[in-house]
Image 1: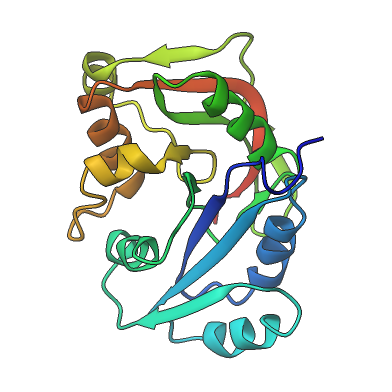
Image 2: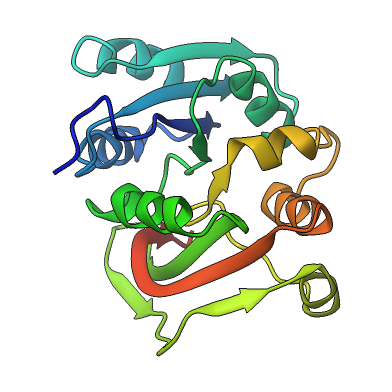
Length: 210
């Protein structure tokens, strides 16, 4: 079991936009990670519901940084949060999804062992707005992609399952704030730098379709 000092720091940077219905469940799953060393940064992107009040309330229970901005979209919200991130690796879950407990640990171990990989993804369990499972992705082996394949097949390592190497994100200049498909652009930008993109055949997140 690695102690906190040996385990690399992970930054969990989550954008929030009108997620009041699911916030508590999502944040509980983030803080339920079987991993000893992570920081949580949440950026509210101009929510008009009760999200900010709920987040402030949740800060009484959970130790996370909270920043707010006028609504500028998810890419801008992530850039805002990344300014404060100190981790060696970064994951950017949505606050209506649920991270499975082993999610961070398995992906960190993988990036530790594969320095040529700039982003590692995994599979998703889809659920409906009430949290009922709709379907579960299944694969039998690790998929690997280089830049040409990412571009040709529009490969997206989805935000709920991507763990990025911070050095790669920084070299990629983070997100273009005007672009909406933030997970595709980051997959593409990291691959363009010469890193490999790998996807593990293990489900690591429950993704809400609504």
